[in-house]
Length: 315
View: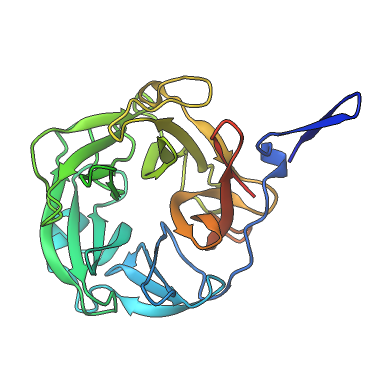
């Protein structure tokens, strides 16, 4: 972290800027079962943590302290045959988004195959969040090869008016958003909004949170899924409206490729991304996966705060 000291008479002014890439902090200490990809985390009413991540039938992990994690089975231990149209029969389901509203857990998750936009996002709910207790609530949105978007990487945000929105998207024409019915969690109208894109380039994994007067849209740029050669990095923009327009620190629209980098590969941390922001008792926490030197995909956790101009940075 840079500190620029300006001395004038007896006055000292400290200006704090976000870290440069070379100075990004190491992930915080985690132990136990920390092999994850595309993690999403919710804090349970009892204060413990529930993690959902990409894996066969959607993998689950739990922690009591946000440090030690253990495997907790799968969302659908008996399989999810309704997804096979999109997965080619594979049980590997991707990029879940888990949250807790109105006394139950809501899980949006993706079904697809690598490189294809014949994809779908489904919803499941549970009152406990435990393995085997989840009920499939059906298809939320799908994409076909004739579409210019890809229906994977869902993220639910509830705005200040209590309206529910789902952002999603990967490559193709970028990040999209649809309105949901808060009663069912399913799609409420036919409108698809565009909120970020790179002209067909590598952008995916949206995550939106409201802090202060702004909604912040976190996305991942560049390539995941290539082990230690992955170039994933976490970018952010913000807007005073949940539907955008989102712009980066320099005022560049995220629909025109804009984004301010807040975390990238450094040292033995390769390709950090597919981030999720959790509001916790000690502040905001950035949860993500990254690749070790041996190619293993691991859970990364850092604290997240905002500078004097309101822009996020990790520490």
